Length: 385
Image (cartoon, rainbow, N blue to C red; front, top):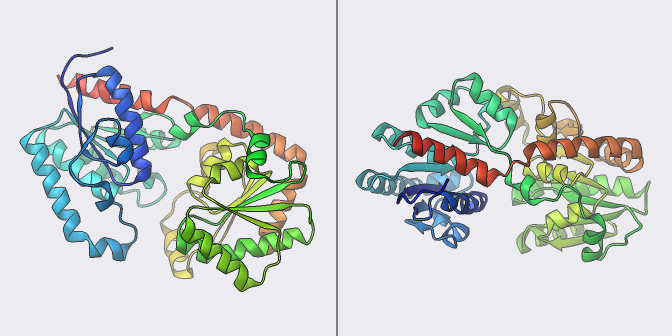
């Protein structure tokens, strides 16, 4: 249904991933409301779709407690400016994309003012600090989730919710292009490839880089034909990994690639990686994987008491069973990681079983997320007319 109503749709995105989601959402909503005006906070992707950003998105892109504390006054000023703008010229809906610590408070104030509010991308409330659900229930008229198990959690707590699927599942082909990825990267097509992803942030690489390299050395001693490729998100991570290799005196046939992490995973036979969104990407590429992660002992003890789910890797959470090995904290040793990788390199039957399971999960998430999210938001706005 196309409407000629001149809707004003407010969107708040605080980081690059939210900017991409926001741009797709704007395109889908504009099909329904060609004369709509989009305003709030967004980045280059959203601005390219005709979005008007009241504040540069980079001002919200803050990582870490120290950084947040250092910018807390500015963040409060931005929040006050947004609320003043929304209360003075009320939009037809306010949509917060991820960044829940910032967006949920704005959504709640807008909802109390009478503006319908939507949150896109659920916080991990199903996994830890579950009492946050009561704050969320007061903040949103609609929650849009990327995963079906998230939607079930909200339904159980009587929070209006729509499962829309994951945009990555829409963008990644059901059949991975392994041969073309290998040709593009220049790796030998007939030899096995291990993709190593210790994380995109400095702290993750510091904690996991040496561990993963030692696991690769353990593997190389038993399978010298394996090609090792590490994608580095930027020049800083590439320099950090290079210095780490030098300091460990690790003699390995190692290739560093700047960016292109999806291409590296597509070219691989197995992926050794940190827990996080990369596990979803590896699953969508139908790649066997081994997940390893370490925190400080204090952080691990605290988090292990707070977390209420048995897995951390998204493929396991989606399947509700252990499809991929998770070696965490003391279990994350070079030998155990290497053994798990070797098993997945050499077990063809397990590879076929995993690929079938990953294909089924991919199809579950491949829902046309932009369109489904736009339909749910449109239904909410129309119900308020």
